[in-house]
Image 1 (cartoon, rainbow, N blue to C red):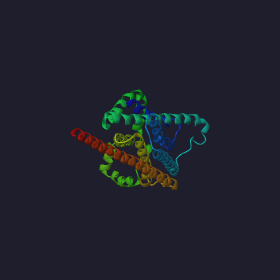
Image 2 (image 1 turned 120 degrees about the vertical axis):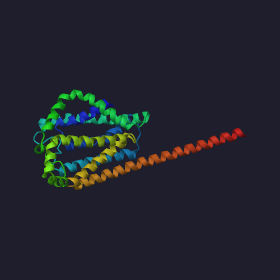
Image 3 (image 1 turned 120 degrees about the horizontal axis):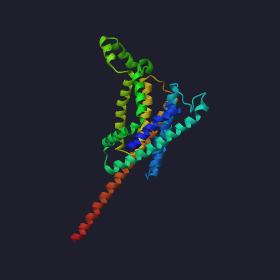
Image 4 (image 1 turned 90 degrees about the vertical axis):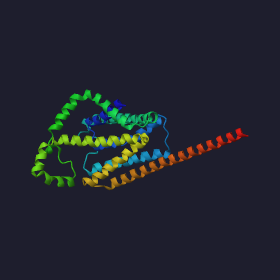
Amino acid sequence: MSLMFFTVNILNNWAFAFHISVPLHIILRSFGSVTTLFVGWLCGRTYSSVQVLSVVVLTIGVVVSAWADAEAKGKDTSFVGSGESEKHAGSFVAGVWVLFVAQVLSAWMGVYTEATYREHGRHWREMLFWSHVGGLGFSIVLAPTLWRQGVRIWSLDDDTTGSVLPEIVTKAVHPLTRTTLGQWMKSLAPPQGVMLLLLNALTQVACISGVNRLSAQTTAVTVTVVLNIRKLVSFLLSCVIFGNKMSEMMMIGASIVFGAGAVYGWDGSRKKRVGGEQDSNTEENGVVKKGKKEEKKEL
């Protein structure tokens, strides 16, 4: 499990070395629900036609939203950078294959985790701990690269990283930095690159903890559906917090995602309700049959 977790994360980050833009990275990874659905089917899982259709429609909605969000921000959504198509075409194809392998491994890891919880109990904290601690051991092979990246992060300053906070926050914080206390605290603070790294680590702790807790309570496909909906919520929050424009295409994609997510949730709750009724009927029939046998014995 630790090796799979480490490999998936390395491959997802390695894909950026093959001239794949961040918007396209998000779009290609949005097919995680479909991949998990297919891998689950290969492993003997069964899904209703409503679930399959809602997963496919939801994935389309996330792709539309991600594409619209990237275009609204003026980011590159072309498959290969303009003017460099011949130079980077082969590299881009290799990057797509890297993401594809990562998607398949991630889907298989999700299905395997679901089976592990079912067989050995839903100990999500233990799974979270060992998957990360074990991954740290494999990171030794990347020690030289990690050292170089650490030096680069430490050397980053405010001019290099730019402002990453919402305007409403910077307006509130900026007057405080002009005071004597503010200047003193700023001089003691580590470089902004390190601060951003720590902030990213804290958000990752909250994110991965929630994902592991969710995976212990539901199926692997449901986890990927929730993650795709969360991805859309992030797009919408970026429009509100950072003042990005919400295009009509994004609103259409959002409607598709929330609609498909609602249908998927409704079908799952319906199947649970029907299953619960069948279990209760079985228990009632068992009680009746047992009562009849006891009556025969008394006679």
